[in-house]
Length: 220
Image (cartoon, rainbow, N blue to C red; front, top):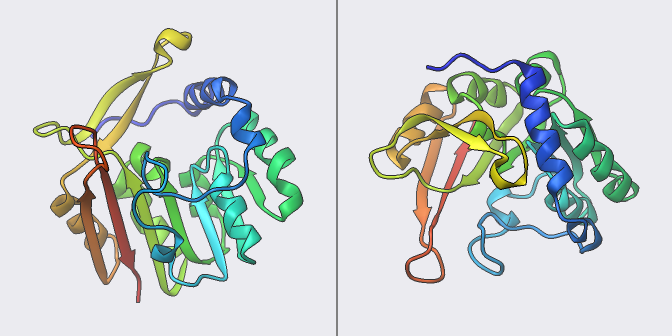
């Protein structure tokens, strides 16, 4: 397992991502989807009917804003102060609370619990699941759910995968993403303390495009 990067370097990486985010993302209405494709796949029903949610690696916060409009107590954690400043300004008036923190530290130090925790191409993809998943399970209320989505693993390339972000947009910075088969993800979830788990790959709406891996797990 790779050593975890210096948090300052990780923060720089996600600040760069935040600074490159198109301004029209914050000008659009709240929206909620698990996949890369508009109008495709399941919606917030995968969360059940939560009164409170936490999004880990919340990025632009549009999904949290959508849930807040439905009366859900919505909290997001992201380690980029640039992104958190932008999301707080845009979605804070809707009642969404944004926390600027490393997700592992936040989950370990917080005593707050939630009916649902979720990640859309967020922290579940970029954080060691052996460390993250047990912390998430501890922060869920009885019967609470974790739901996450991200691209499926490249066949034959499983486990922590080194990758560069930045590329043509600026300095390339190194990080890891964690890619596993659905079967492996299910095993990781059950080992972390969830009593049941389902992980599957949803095909893309257009042939030849990349599908989406979706996982859902429930605690006792």
